[in-house]
Amino acid sequence: MNKILAICLLVFSPLVFGLEVSPYPQGKISLDQWKTYYAEVKKTLSATEKRVEDQGLVTYSDSTKNVHYAFTLDNHPAHPAWISRVIIDKNGELYVKQLGYFAGSEPPFATLFAQYQALNLEMQKWLNEQRNKKNK
Image 1 (cartoon, helix red, strand yellow):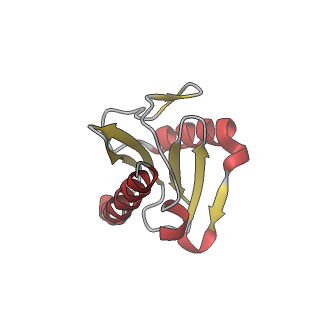
Image 2 (cartoon, helix red, strand yellow):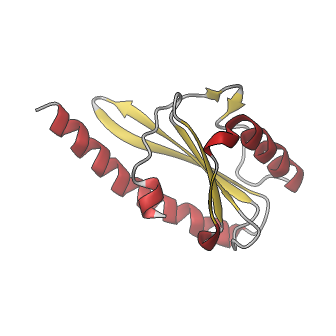
C-alpha cells in the first residue's frame, strides 16, 4: 500500500466532477449509501481504476483535482468502506486531509483508517521534502 500511496499528490477540492469528497455527515453509513457512492466514483473515474487484490482495495484518482479514493473489496476485513484523501497547503506546508466511511464493522475500519493515517505522515514528509528541494 505504501508504494501505491506515497506517490499520490492531492490538492483540496470539495467537488470532483460533481463528486463530493465528503458526501455524508458521519463515517457510519448504510450499505446503499456505500454502493451509490462507489458507483458514482467508478463511473466518473473508471479510467484511473487500480485494483490491488492482495490488499483488498481498488483505488481511483483524479489527476486534475488530485483526489485519491481507496475502496475496500469483498476480501478486505473493513468491507464495505472507503478512504478519501486530499492535501491541503497551509502556510507553505502540505497536510493530508483524510475522510473515511464504512457500512460494515467499525473495528476493521478503524484499523484501515489508522493505517492510512500512518501513510499520510510519511507522505506529508516526502511531499514537503520534495517541495523544499524544488524551492532551493
